[in-house]
Length: 206
Image 1 (cartoon, rainbow, N blue to C red):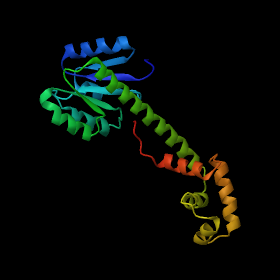
Image 2 (image 1 turned 60 degrees about the vertical axis):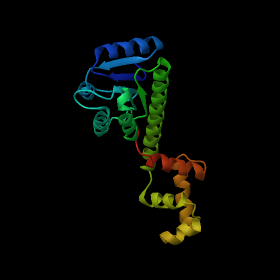
Image 3 (image 1 turned 180 degrees about the horizontal axis):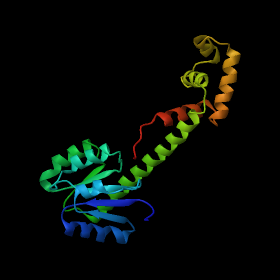
Image 4 (image 1 turned 120 degrees about the vertical axis):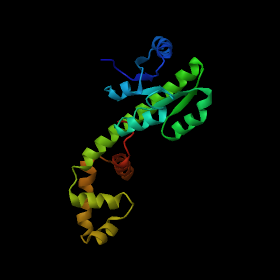
């Protein structure tokens, strides 16, 4: 198994696939090539990496490929390669979620820059997903009442205000608050806010 991010290159032109492989592999990138969007969609894709795809292909264009990947729950960043006459279509692809587009013929540096940006985006998305998973597990340890108290704490309400809203004593709120901080391993209110925000963040990887 190849460790680290993989660049998945999709193009119906075998010569272009080999040319891109020839550029990327000596630079240290792991590369997988696909001569059809359908071949990519049928593959088991690791979480780390990005997709570099031609825009115009027989089975589907770059936008449809993006849509199909998203529908499959795959959030690998997509870079679209386009011919001169397809620039407007590539802009539409970016609006649909592509992280960049490259107009053929492109310089090696432009390709490397686009791939690095896509891989960085992918890494940040995976890190956010990991944080969200940890935060969700922590929140799941709270009782229903503790979660109610937490929801008010993170909005900045005082113990007295929360007690009035929930119809319990401020002292009871103190106890719940202490348990919340302990269970969530938080040392401050900003820690609690960040944890709740992480759990609510939408997934961006797979």
